[in-house]
Image (cartoon, rainbow, N blue to C red; front, side):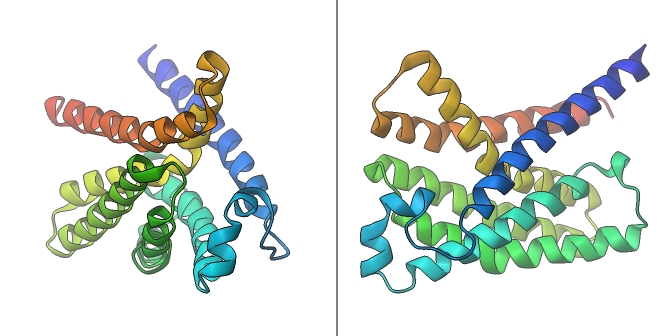
Length: 212
């Protein structure tokens, strides 16, 4: 019975992730061929035209983040890996490089110019700092042979990466249930999109430690 429940749980997680990842991929593909006035960029015209690096950094973030989401899914669920450990390491290197040098820093830059004023900016900047911190610490821990600590920090890192999906999910829920002003909704999901992810992963880490 426990095995069946576990498999059903895994299937639900995979199905949910796949659904939202496909939606995210569709959003990403809308920006290609490269444009400066589509989707999110349509409301960032001031930054696009007045900040020369903005468009380039935005595309760096969009392109690298989609690969981080894809690779990370297979890295943080070891029971589902269908490839040798050496591939786990190779994909791990790619995940870390993409995140620490591209997706993370570009996310901080975009977050600094976020819509929604100071509260939204703080939310996205804190998200970016924690994303870089946990990913960097996971590297240090694996280099120090702290496999468990490395695993937990990678969980945290990927939970924050998933904010790209959960932010959009919560936006739909909040708007449907409460019909807030667009600006208020944006501020709410700027926090809700990653804080709940982090709380959930900390709960899972606590449970795993207690069950050892």
